[in-house]
Image: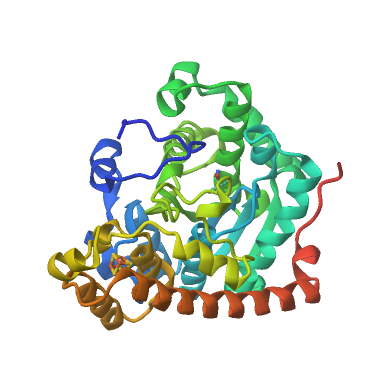
Length: 368
Ligand code: TRP
Ligand code: SF4
């Protein structure tokens, strides 16, 4: 893997240990004891790294002001990778934290060159899916990047003074005016909550996929440079491993046949699973003799990230696989059944959320 992380790329990150070393992300296992309660993503090291999350947790414990900020780029339909962030937000809400969520319509327009009206329509779906997943709208705020107040845009203007081209290139590789705007907009997303207008200084944590770390590095530098002038401080962040697509590459909205979307009908999802890359052997005989390789398997990954909550059950699946007690066909049928249940229940709640009109109501539309 090259040293550069590209938040706008389409790759799977194979070696998370290297990421910790190269970019100075701290391993999560050392601070698990600080969590008020457990969550499978921490237990299973799906959330593998953090920056200053211990500081955020300690502030929470002391009863100081904390908040959570993250964003979704509404290009394509939300999928099981998107739902990982929903799951994390749900967990952080369960600790008592308020969450604020950017719908990154500016980023989708600039970097993905998407049609604005389409992106704005999809923003509502992302919000409705997050509520259907279990995010409590009473303790959450959602906004479009292009529908914010003046103070937010002022940050983007001010930020541009204290970054250099060389630094942007070092972080992002090839840059252009659009990418710089998108990056500074994301910094404004993360830092604006500390302005007086938004309640003043508070500890912010940003839950994201590992590919977003370049934005966090930039934002931390910007916070340092504006500490004196604007009272901004570095955000904390937690990083999850990227859910791979069913072909083993990053699950991406732009390759729908290898992603499970939250609005896929269960039959379609089942067909996708049937064609998924597994850690199985070339023949049944070989698999019985040598066992499968769950660490290479996109089905097993679904168990870990979404389909099995119980640790004991997960361990049994793992053991059965490596001991050659189960073959991939049967294992896929078990996964398909669990996935069908998950999708049916989620889609039922999604329909209720849409019918209630709440997503539309809480997401203020941009004026043009
Ligand atoms: N860039 C993120 C993505 O591609 C979306 C995003 C926008 C975001 N603003 C943010 C993520 C602020 C975290 C914090 O999905
Ligand atoms: Fe994956 Fe299941 Fe096959 Fe093991 S048995 S490789 S977990 S599909």
